[in-house]
Image 1 (cartoon, rainbow, N blue to C red):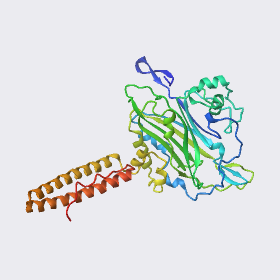
Image 2: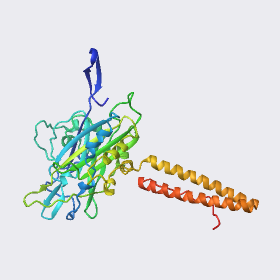
Image 3: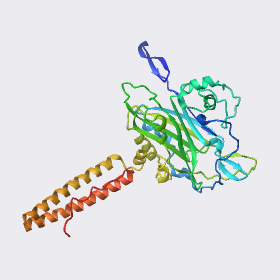
Image 4: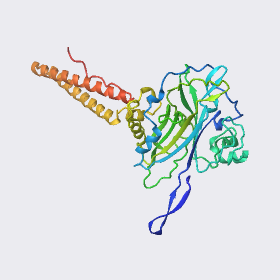
Length: 405
């Protein structure tokens, strides 16, 4: 069992055993902890070209904080929801060549475990002395995270502060667009071998998984970037290892930031990085909750979620957020199938009337077939539009056969 068991008192003096939730820690580093080899160089950017400022208030495109809203839509499911916060010292770095995204924040990692200590290495991998930190021997590091396949296991443990074998671990690297106006997270590692909560009376064999990362300015009530990775009705262990690398986010515009007036100030533009891990008890509930959380914000400036923001979210979340539910698509497809069958029947009746050489029946059957074809075209257009709005492919079934003009 991954989570610790704690005995608690209940009414009547009977004791019960409940699971204590594990802890979540999120952080940023120059190199991802499991890929670490040598300390990085401070005040370094990882773009080779000067950053072009994006004159976009990205916060106006986001429907408030997804993390703060999502819990409201998962309370009935009693999902396991873990949250973490990391204060990033500087998202940008000011150099003689210009302003760049800071390399110390290039990698984002999220770990879930029963116990952590203070990291004994900074974001660049340099050994530091902090209260509560501890040095880890190579043997201890290898024994603690054998399944993460780290280049230097004890260094990865010291970078993250892991004091127990993780039950979930994620690493993602920031990637910049070719024109340097947008960024996204590229998954480098996902370790999720088993569900964190063991199967019980109220647990399904398949569940939903969600990992959300939010970047926001200090004291801002809305983030300037949201990255949400969701998987519905997944089987245990199905996202572990290489399978998890399929989680790649869409592009988000880079936040605009003017260089500091102090030329000696290297790191600037501090941001808060929030992380949320969700594991539901039942399948097919998380994506709808994400969409509802996005749709729930009442602020007129952000109530309409922009398409470019939705690109960074899962397809099911986009469906719900845009108000185009799967039910609407299914209804349209059923109507299309019904119209297709009616058109086929009308066409067969017309062919039979022609074969019988009955002029009256042929005329009536042709009129009925023409009307059925019009209804089929209308149903097809509606189904195509509903599917397109929901991001679902649509394949045309065609007409039963040609009719005379």
